[in-house]
Amino acid sequence: MQYMLLVYSNESRWENVPDVERQEIIGKYMALAADMRERDAYVDGNELQPAPDTTTVRVVDGETEITDGPFTETKEALGGYFLIEAETLDEAIEWAARIPAASHGVVEVRPLVPAREEVSA
Image 1: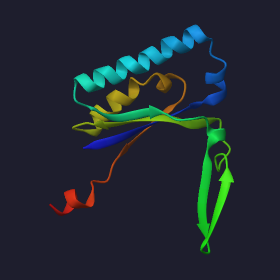
Image 2 (image 1 turned 120 degrees about the vertical axis):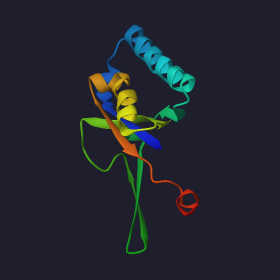
Image 3 (image 1 turned 30 degrees about the vertical axis):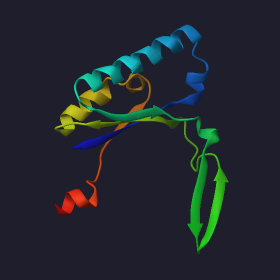
């Protein structure tokens, strides 16, 4: 089963991390992704641009509304994701706990709904 590991952290904290520490943290993410690949768990993953670069789109009464930035005010913003293959939720949680941001932010673990052709097969 595929799981999305959504990584939330405080963007202002990340902006203030010294370059040496930032490189160390990035190295931890790269090592984790390499381990996921080695164990055939890694499907995809990436860091997202900061929340202020977000564009929010809504369609209300047939009209498209576009808003700059995230819709809600929050200290923690979605900063990246890993899409993984895991046999169980427990395995997905083990991967999530290894994400560096889990120690100062939140990692949301969400199972994906199988594609329609997989469901009907």
